[in-house]
Amino acid sequence: MPHITHCIFDMDGLLLDTERVYTEVTQQILDKYANGVKFTWDVKSKLMGRTGEESAAMVVDTYKLPMSPEEYLKICSVIQDELFPHVKPLPGVERLIQHLKRHNIPMAVATSSSRAKFEQKTSLNKELFALFDHIICGDDAGIEHGKPAPDLFLAAQQRLGNPPADNCLIFEDAVNGIEAALNAKMHVVWIPDENILNLQGKDTDHGATLVLESMAKFDPRHFSLPAFDPEGHTETIETSDITKQ
Image: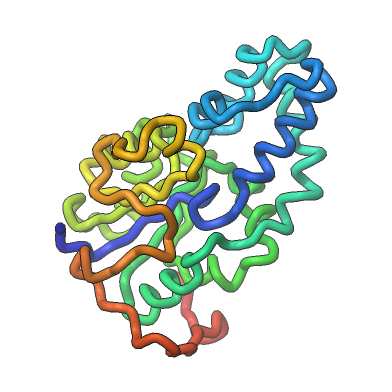
C-alpha cells in the first residue's frame, strides 16, 4: 500500500448521512409530480457526487418532470432546509477524523455541495468539521468542473501545500468521485452504499485502491498512517484547542 501523508474527504454519504435526505426529498417530488414513480438506485448512483445543478437536470430529464432544473432545485431546497441540519456522521467517521487530527495528519474536505449547503448540512456538527484544515466547496472560486473532473481534489491538494499526489488519499462513496480521484492521480478508498454494491456487483472496485463497507473498517496502518490508539481510548479533541489554518 502507498505511503500516505495527507487525507482528503468527500462529505455527502461519506462523512454525513445526507444521501438518505436526498433520496427522501427526491421521492417526495416524484410522488407529487411523477405519479409516485420510484427513485431507484440505478439513477441515484449516477447523481452522487455531482453538483446540484447537474443532478437536478438529470432528475428532471430522467423522470420527465414538468419543471425546469432551477424550479426543481427551489422545491428541493424548501424540503432540505428542514432535514439537512439534523444529519449525523456515519459510523467510524468521528473516530478516524479525531485520530488523524491527534497525529497531525493534514486533512481537507472536498465536497460538490455549495458553501451555503455545506454550512446547512454541518450546522450540528461544527466541532467535527473544525478538525479539518481546509474545506473546499463546489462553488468556490477556481472550481470550474464538478466530479469526475479532478478540480475539487486538486484545489484541496493545493490548499494542503501541494504534497505529491502519490502521498494523498481520498475517501469517496460515489463512482464519479473515484474517477475524479484517479484523474487527480491520487489514491482512493471507496466506501459505497450497500445498494450500489448490490447494483454493480460485490467485486467491482472502479479502480479504487481499497473498497470498504464502512469507515469503521478502515485501518490506517494499510497506508502507513499512525495506528489507532488501543481500544478503550476515549480522548477527544476540543475545538477550542485548535488553531484553524
